[in-house]
Length: 445
Image 1 (spheres, rainbow, N blue to C red):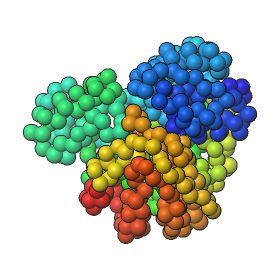
Image 2 (image 1 turned 180 degrees about the horizontal axis):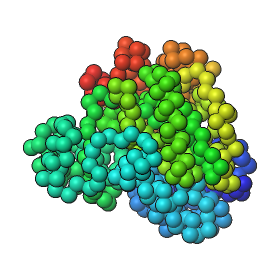
Image 3 (image 1 turned 90 degrees about the vertical axis):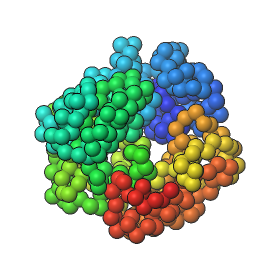
């Protein structure tokens, strides 16, 4: 096992990784920007080092600074968390070339699965159903129209190197492609430094289902699926497991085929394979080659610490889990608490938290990095914590979540807590009668 790990991230995921390392008896190094000097992850780590200014490109995205920090502190491995450099193949390659362990898959696999066009081909070659669409980059409006005519409108233009809704545009008719295709390419270039885009069939009422896997050289196991269909602009707000709309036959097929694909590509570490699900059929969407924001909802349902498993696989190359070790119980729900104002189009709400009381109680978990007096800056993602509740069934999990949300007190900034209460109390959420576009259609904000 490693003796010292550098955590190349901040906020709640950095805190989560540090806690897992402590349970393994591993020393931790926190890196931070100048405005994160008093952050929770810095306080909890054994060592900390400032790597630059508040702009991400000067600190958390600065590969040279991160490698220097690992060198001067004697770290043996680097855990990237999620976001920032977690799916940056170049970073993973540099870490490995410097004799350190990148806690994640190989740089080659990160590159292949990070390119959505390549990932589609790999999934298709390995037995997963893919959404009907173009086989490669779309270079012209004429090509876009020809492809769209073939698969039928509406269509979705997607950035090959993208995610999070950036570089994505829905076209309902040929004329719209003339404006939307160049716009999607511009966004793709801006956010991902890659203007390649492809086109696929747009589903109007889909669910978003994903499968969590842990994979070593010896075997791959799944930790069941998550339903992440409560979204705003392709950003997940609420996740739950198991999915309340999938029957056991479909679930077994989905999990089995996912495991086979992950095994065939030689994947190592924690990963998530995401799918669109509509009318009883699922279609490959993408693979995230890192730990997900929503991993705790799976942890509380299975009793398996995904971060500790990540570290163990990185250390030994193998997973000590077998599929028989995975025995999910009950139902779990996670709410992402963001420092945003839903009444003002989710405008970020930076500031100092003047009062902070976090909920507790039976099967109630908070993953966060907030405390009374901490400063929420405008420079990073607005996610400040996650609330996870577990119940014997979905009804109990919802009831427990509503109780916990009522207990949560955060003053000094505006959060999405009240929005979550509204969503979880809605009859359509209670009956699981919704899709990824539900919040927009119901005009929740």
